[in-house]
Image (tube, rainbow, N blue to C red):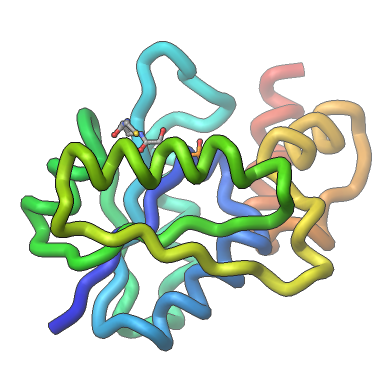
Length: 161
Ligand code: PNS
């Protein structure tokens, strides 16, 4: 059984993330989508809301589950017996941070490989940060995020505003 962890902030999940999950789900027996809680960076959605959205939009993948985690990614990955960490690479601009993280994670836990997957090219310019900004300024985000996330963004920003 080859299990991989797909970690991220997922604040919120976008179509780009979902495309990476779909690809990873064909390569590994099991995928755990792991939402990292970062107390220094609370984000727009609570951890419960992020996990709830992740569960809704990954329901159709029988080998994908969702979890929240605190602390080091490699510890979470080891505790679940993962062989790999999956990360999406959209552009050269992602590379430096991803390379640094992959090498540091390897230093901390040499048995876990980082595997980079590239989403469909029409998703390469999507990021959670930009989607939130567009939604905050009243733009339509339906093309960039799954429908339950677009609804959640509208609700959240209406409540916030
Ligand atoms: O979606 P993001 O914000 O690019 O995801 C970054 C994430 C959550 C994968 C990264 O910050 C992480 O792994 N956090 C957990 C803490 C940890 O292990 N940090 C050391 C990484 S070298």
